[in-house]
Structure formats: structure tokens, C-alpha cells
Image 1: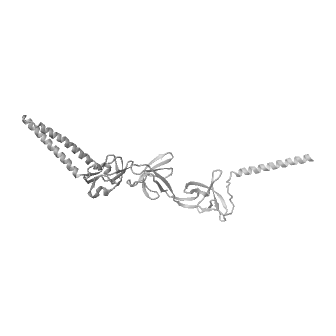
Image 2: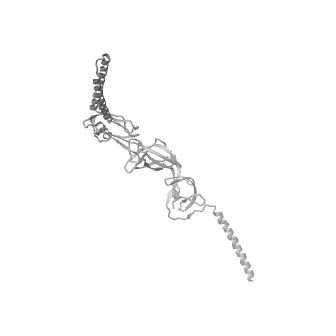
Image 3: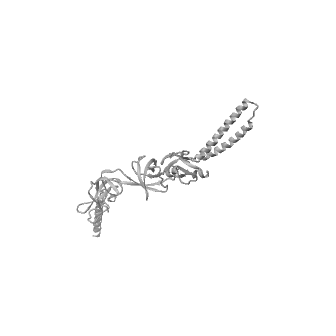
Length: 348
């Protein structure tokens, strides 16, 4: 009797095992289907948002940092004019550069004229010319008449000329100080017009800035970006600091691995921006026409690498819907299939 009961129990266990095996096989086949990680058919309060369809506008930001530059201030005092005699009055001769102009080292920037020094130089040269004429005359007379000797007179005149040449050179050197030349390659960033003119003349020893330039060119700012945007050299963009707005021109594009290295300079090359300034540039992307898009929080990735959204029906129940996605733009993701726009989707 006991033996029969044991055999029946074995058969029951075997039957239960077979049933369990069949149930396990159904579960395995269901894994190939979409298994949402949230409860679908639950009616409760959800954070929802409407799927949009239309034109999508977006923008991105770049943070530009400056490269160091050297500022050179030019003035009469900087050109050692203060070492000249204090009573030398100068007349403005000309300014040969304009604001924003690129210059090379040695280019003439500004010049002044001293009538007193000009008269001195002319006086020295006139006396030298007169002495040379006299010396030539004495020598001709000595050639004509060997009995006459003007050697002492000629020697005195030649000695005098040597002194005059020194005076003339000194005056010429002083006049050179009235000409201001560029010390380095650079860009003219500022010209103090009133100080240059100064009612037509200027006195020595002035410490007023006349021209300012920077040795490395205009203010240069750069940034690296992996943004897929059609940057073009010469395009103008607005950049801001906490207090100022600047119009910046794109002057160079270099490849740096998978990024672009962009170089910007002020559209007006005379503008000086502190090299430690941080500029923020906001650039609008091209408008994406007639696209379906939704908040990125509405899209979920499944274990089998698919994307779903939970669409709410008219009764408030959620249904998992498979979608195909595109680019992400400022918190919005493009939906290429699965939604048409107007659907209400859950964000939680």
C-alpha cells in the first residue's frame, strides 16, 4: 500500500515538473516582447507633457577666453623729448596712421616740427656751405699763384666745419625725436586726436598718450567646440561680458582632434578687450522644419536597446509606445517615428 502511494507521489512530482517546464518556456518567449519598466495600465497622477510637431528653434553657447597681448603707449615723453631744451616749441606735422590700422615695426606714426631747430640746422648748413665755398676759392687762388698761401685760413675753416657738423648732427638727432615710430608690429588701438593737435603745437615733456598699440595685434579670443555648426571665417557674432557687448569676427578655424579651434577678434580692431575677460557667445542653430519632438525625460531605453514613451490615453492610462529617435536639442529629442505630435506623454 505504501509502495503504491510513493509511486503515485513520484508521478505527481513528475507531472508538476513538466508543467513548470512548460510555464518556464512561455516566460522565455515573453522576454522577446517589449517589457516596460513601469506599470502601463495604471491610472494615477503623472507629470505629463504634449508631444510637439512643428519648427524647432535652438541655440548654443560658447565661452571665449583671451590671449595675452602687450600694450605700448606712445607719447613725446616716451620718445625722450623731455631731454630737449624746454623752450623748443613743436608744430604738429602729421599723423600717418588711423585707428584700427595694422603697423609694422619701424613705421612712422606721428611727426612734429620745431621751427627753432629747423632754423638752427639750416644756419649750420648754410655756414658749412659758405666755408666750403671759401675753402675752394682759396685753393683755386693758391693753384693760380703759388706765392700765396691760405693754408692756415683753410685749416681754420675746416676746423670750424667739424664743429658745425657736430652741432648740426645734434640738432638733427633732436629732430628725429619729434618722429614717433612703431616699436613692434601691432594694431593702432587709440589716437588721442586732441593731444596730437593741441591747438597746432605742443611743448616738450608732455606725458599725454598720443598713440596706443599692442604688439600682438588686436584682442584675440579663442574657444574649442564639438558643436556641429557651419562656422565661416569672416562671420560676425555678438559676445558679452557682465557689462559689455562686443561684435566679434571669426578669423580662424583649426581642427583639433574631434573639435574645432575657433579664433575671434573684435570687428573693430581698435577695441581693446582685457585679456582676462571671459566672453559668452550665444549662437542660433538653423531652424529644424516640421519635426516631431518631445522632452527627453519622456523617452526611456529598454534592456533590448529600444526606446519607448508612455502615452496616456483619453482615460488617463499609460501605454508603452516604441519610438525611433534623432538628435537631442536643448532638452528636446527628435522623434522620427512612433509619434505624430499632439500625444500626451508621461515624464515620470
